[in-house]
Length: 331
Image (cartoon, rainbow, N blue to C red):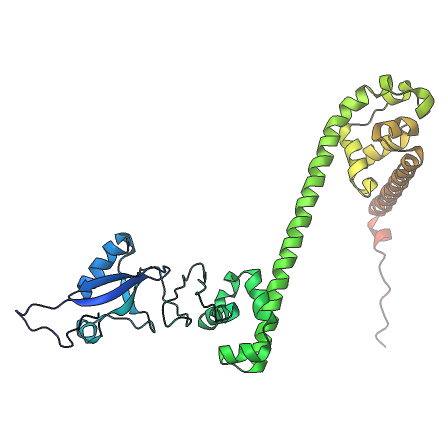
């Protein structure tokens, strides 16, 4: 039975009657019956009944039906008994879901929707309302929600958002772009993880290589490899050069001229053992290093030639370097 509410404001000195109200949090499905004499009394009881932290003050009371903010005692007293209120903390915002006459609730932060028992309303409509209230909430939507809005017929979504079909078609295209960008970001991340794993694996192999080279001559049968233990121990290249030869796609461009000379002079068999390559690949790399070294030497020779020409010219008398030109006949 509803307790009749006093519709007039209490006069000074008069005992204020208690008004029965229904109170709940914005994200909760549980509601509490509260009797309050005034708006401040209801707000004070909301802290205790709904376990709202005082650090979240002030609490705003709104009507569950349409989100109207109730901040006037006279208006509060004019409301009928058992009016439903929502208590919003300072960091909360009321959101409406028309599925059971105002008894469904939604949290702004998570946009989680509680399905009612009858389940009459499609889920995409709730997501569409979130988007209608705040377009920037696109970035908060899950991929499932994005795909759901993309799959909705354009006419249905246009009717729900109260927009033209052209506008809604553009919105669905934007949602598809957001979904594609997330998929591209996921694939890029997976490729990066695979690349880092490959680098880590290769690093472990390179770190173990000196040990394997140290015992290679003792453990390998010369009849199988065709290379002697003596040739593998005579290599004079540093580990830095060997690493560059193995890791760089064009190692001849990464090595210094001195390193190139060392590589070209190295015995192909010994170098093949050190790099764990076959002879053909080793000779190909040595040939590329030799060509790069020859090109650099030619460039150096050309530079020296230019310097010599410049030096000889500077040593000539001034008359020969800058011969006077004959004066023109003014006529």
